[in-house]
Length: 225
Ligand SMILES: [Zn+2]
Image (cartoon, helix red, strand yellow):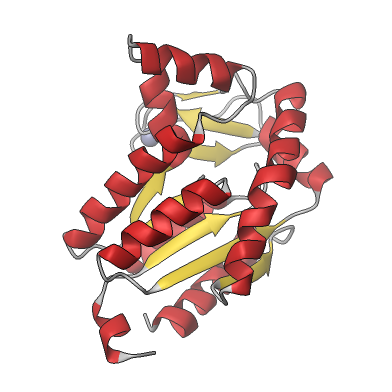
């Protein structure tokens, strides 16, 4: 990797179907390498609680399992990523980019800032397993972090001790719609990144510790961490 590329902080995009463990891997990157994690879904859910016309639009779309409008997401996420990178922080991002438009806005924004240490980790999981995982997902009311639990009486959040709740949009019907959106909108984005040589594919039907190990190995090799 070139010297100029080495000097900018790295960006890792965690991509894959809903329920592929993107949030888990962002948290692991935060712990292992000190990445700043950005969860697009949590950003949007926070926005959907705002009493504003944008907030209501996002809420209506999210309640029906549809992603928030792309220009809005792209603007929100790009701003957040560029701010961290300018502060010299490594960024691990989940839930975005989900469309080619977002991908283009993000990449051109990064390049404008001279940020070219980009790695896309594709967490590849079969459909049946993602639906099962979504039904086992709990989210912390405090820090919005999600946790996989098959037990029905979860204890508090491992990070902040907050109360764990089920997300209203984690239903089989919404999971099906999210999978369709993923297939038709996100998969082409992953192919786009693949053509640029930015993608490492990790089979994520394996145990969490095994997937984590593979992701960290890729991050060390490709980003020199
Ligand atoms: Zn928490």
